[in-house]
Image (cartoon, rainbow, N blue to C red; front, side, top):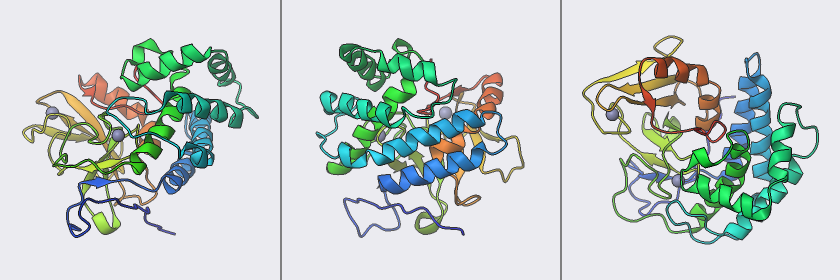
Length: 286
Ligand SMILES: [Zn+2]
Ligand SMILES: [Zn+2]
């Protein structure tokens, strides 16, 4: 079954079908695809337990979608409604309370042990991009609740006006991308950058650096063949890189899942002196 992703769109101008600046995938479908992909990639993977844990967190996010609908409009980098975000975190922790893998149990307990004001301060730090202020082991759980709320809020607010396409950061919430996606189906062959916070995707032409815009010195690195589903697009001008995940090559690929399952590629590219220009919500920067 080669089912294409269901990318429900909200467009300022529905007539501009050949060029869609912003995609906002249906969240239930996105979480379902991501969780299934994480479980599939876990088979035989060195970090299978963590990929399966990430799938469980994603499934918990999906189950809380009805609870996340009451959200305020989203401002760049801000928590739209902090109280609601903490309530979602409580419910997320409750959903994940059973059959916790031993390596994760202390981190789950650590989040549970945070006082409300500590949770709020840590969530604010993540929303502001101050990742070093939050322990890396607990950050993904806090991020998952924050992201669920921001993604829901982003779909309840008007799409941003003006020409925000081609920007290095998300035009909706200002966050750096997790990866580039080369789409199949209706947007066949087009490149979109995927936001790890509000789960929006914005268009950027291919064959230019997603960070600095230069096309002068790009290289594509992978462990497999040149036809690999996941490649790292590195730029000799800004020395940045971001992975490119191709749905043309594998229709089941998904930005967060495929990026998380290929962190070994990051190590190889970083060893070449390139710095990642985005981040994965399940492997936040330290
Ligand atoms: Zn965003
Ligand atoms: Zn560059």
